[in-house]
Amino acid sequence: MRDAVIVQAVRTPVGKGKPNGALAGVHPVELLAHTLRTLVERSGVDPALVDDVIGGTVDQVGEQAMNTTRYAWLSAGFPDSVPAVTVDRQCGSSQQAVHFAAQGVIAGAYDLVVACGVESMSRVPMWSNVPPGADPFGPGVAARFSGGLVPQGVSAELIAAKWSLSREQMDAFATSSHAKAAAADFSAELAPIAGLDHDESVRPATTVEVLAGLKPAYEDPVWTERFPQIDWSVTAGNASPINDGAAAVLITTSENAARLGLRPLARLHSFAVTGSDPVLMLTGVVPATEKVLKRAGLRLDDIDLFEVNEAFASVVLAWQQETGADPARVNVKGGAIALGHPLGASGARIMTTLVNAMRERGARYALQTMCEAGGLANATILEAL
Image 1 (cartoon, rainbow, N blue to C red):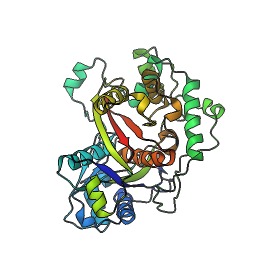
Image 2: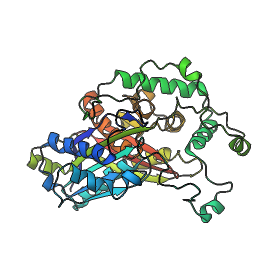
Image 3: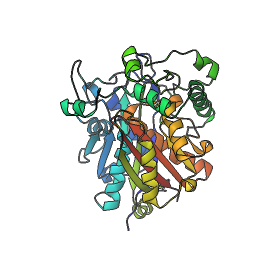
Image 4: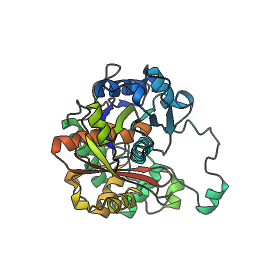
C-alpha cells in the first residue's frame, strides 16, 4: 500500500503585514517563488519530476490573483511542464493543499508533489476580494441564519463567553505564546528573504500586564445588543496579527523517497475536515480533532505534540477544555499570536514547524488542526518514521 511522507519543509520568516513590514516590498509571487526555490535546492530533487504544485491563498485578487501558485513556480525558474493550482479553504488553505497532495500520492495520482501557501497581507489586505457593498453569502444564507453571520472577532468573543474564558486567561495564553516563540530555534526551517531572518511579530517582552492595557478589538453596540453574553475580552494582544509569509512542503512515497535518496521527516498518517456552526465559526477544531483521531485509530493520549492555530487565544483554550489535551504538548514553539498568521501560508507554516518539533523532541505522533472562516476546520496526524 502506498503512503505519503514529507521529505522537505521550508518557510520564510513571517513578516508584519503592514506597509513598514520587512516583507512588504516583496511581491507575493516572489515570496512563494523564493520558498519553492529553497525547497527544491534543499531537497536536491529535479524539479521536472514534480507532478503538481498545490498552493493555498485566501485573498485571490490583485497581486494574488490568476493562480499565484503557477506563477510562483515559473518565477522560481522551474519547468513550465509542471502544473500548479491555487486553492482556498480560508485559513486552512495550505493545510488543505497538503491534504490534497498527500491524498494524490496515496491514490497513485502523484509520485512527487509540492504543497505550499502564501499570503501578503501588507500588499493584499484581508477582504480585498470582497468589494464594498458586495454580499458574498447570498440571500439563502441570510435567511437560514437569523440575524446574519458575524465577523471572526465576534465569533472569538462568543467562544470566550460560551467556555467562560476570562480576559486574564486569554492574555496569559498570549504571553506564553510569545515566550515560547522567543525561546525557540527555527533556523532549520527558515528561508531568509529581503534581509529578514526571524519572525517579525514575536515580542519577547510581552507580559500579561502590558496586554491588560489593550482595548477590546471588536466591541460594538450592534453586537452587544444581539449578544449580551459577550464581555468584550478579545484584543489585538490575544489574537493573531496580520502578516506576510510563505511555506512549502515536498511530499512523496516512502519507496520513492528511498529511490531519490531523500530522508522522510514524517508520514502523513490521517486526515479530516469538518464543518461546524458558521456563527460560532471557529469551533470546528474540536470535531476535527475527534474525527481525525477516530480515523487514525488513535487516542488523544497517543499524540505527543499538538498544533492548534492561534487565530485567537479563545479558540485554543476552548479546544483544550473540550479535548482535555495536555497544555504542555500544545504549540510548544509558540503559535500564530506570536509568530503571525499569513492566512494562506499558515497551514504549511505550521506543518513545517511541527515536523521540526517532532524531530527535536522525539515525538512519534503529532496532530495539527486549524479553524477556518465559515465554520470549517482541517486536522492532520503526522507519524515519525
